[in-house]
Length: 311
Image (cartoon, rainbow, N blue to C red; front, side, top):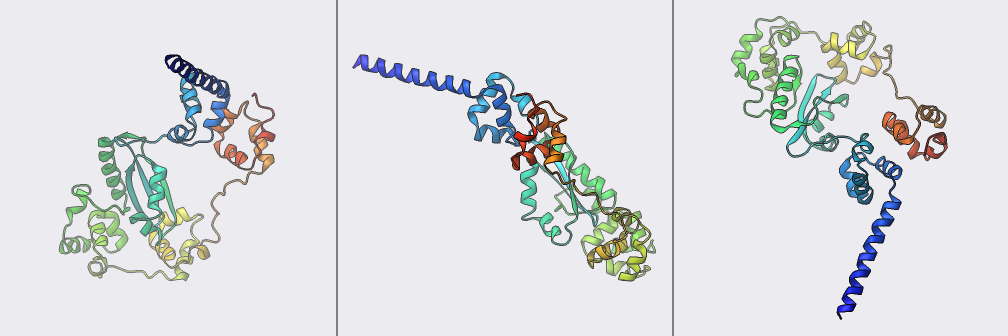
């Protein structure tokens, strides 16, 4: 019985040794690099290819082969981001994984609700992943910056987070402030706190009755739009006309004369090959031209366009 136990133990030892040996032979440094290029996050790499991940740690090349991967935070490290909508609404938030958070925003919440009204937006990451306490302070600071630049804040206010907006607390105080101005534009520009409070509480129609109003018909919007060469310039210099055109879905018609936005270049196999010729190995190609590399891999062009590269 004792001898059987020794033989069994020796067999298990031999099996484990051979398995490790095969793994070492299988996962060379180059193969680890190629495997890592399949993933966008280290966690994804570790979860789906643990043997390659562990081999990379042993070779001490993990940082090098994961340099193309996206950095994410964790429970105590967050980044600040913002959704900037073309109608001057913004949402400022913090998260430990911007990609996952973006997918949630597209399904529910205040960003999702505003997307039903306006689908023209830009998502920006405002900070790196920083300590959560610092991130909370930065979130407040960015909200104030956008507010002071006459953006409408979509965030649901927390106690003290938008303190300066509470300067004009009630309708009478906002009305008293509004009487100083002859137009809503002037009111918004010179007293954004009162204007935003009135806007959020839907008091503008009542407290701005004395102001000169301009009804933006389609013809007047078209006449105004002809002054500008781009939608950005139009929105910046004539927000009232732009907002009316956006709301009534006239933008495509009245902005037809403007320069179209730059479109993403269409990459065919020849263009991908020309791009690949700039690099000496696949790792460099994937790091410095990730979009073309991924497109080539998806279309199974890599072997053809990377023949010049060192193996």
